[in-house]
Amino acid sequence: MKISIIGAGAMGGAVARGLLYKARENYHAGSESIFPQDITISNPHTDKLEFFKSAGINVTTDNKTAAKEGDIVILAVQPWVLEHVAKEIKPFIDYSRQKVVSIVAGVKSDNIIEWFRKESEENELPQLFISIPNIAIAVARSMTFVVPVTISEYDNSTKEVIEFFNTLGKTDIVEERQLSAATALASCGIAYAMRYIRAASEGGVELGFEATDAKQIVMQTVQGAVNLLLAEGNHPEVEIDKVTSPGGITIRGLNEMEHAGFSSAVIRGLKAGR
Image (tube, rainbow, N blue to C red):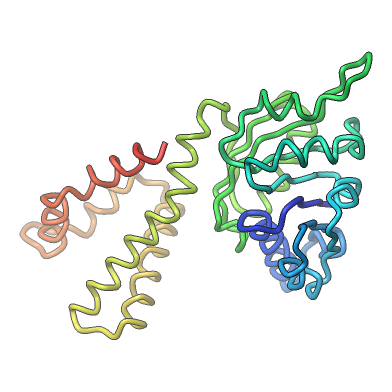
């Protein structure tokens, strides 16, 4: 499978880095992978392309050249540039073969459809998807949401897009109306999780640990909590009950956080991010 990425900014670059990360991971595991030479990335400024060129990825400043190459064409430009880019590359995309995936936040499918519509008797439309990954795609650990726009979720093309994003983390198919909530929970959620890690690390310093040690302790603890929930499949409260003995320090700490509005603050933050 060949992948084209239009835009080497924060998210386009993260997708490319994730593919490189996964290629290295699969190489060491002896598994099949998308190789750097299967990836093409375009960007108007060459400084953002140097790293990817050195890693063996095909780079270009011409979006049209990039668009022609991919079985999956990922649009990762700024929202206000998307219309121009869509109309620029439209004549060079084979709608019968290629899948177009927009990871541009905040642009509605109706607009993207019109920008890609080919004026002909058939009134051709691309195999169009909207996708929202999060920044952890750079290490192949994204929570990604996919909306099949002009094609059924049961179509083989949809399966191929889902399989692609599953190599870079976990993927859910959602309706377009759910994207803002998905963004708040998973994309903004990365920042919220990191803010907890920062706060807990600072608390660790106050408890007497060096800053670097405190951060490592907190990250390992958070990773352990996530892995435990994944392995057991339990509700978080079930696992919390296992470590909160009557009159113990854990329940006292949890209650103090709740008195300060911990859970309600998280929920309010998520709702504010929609």
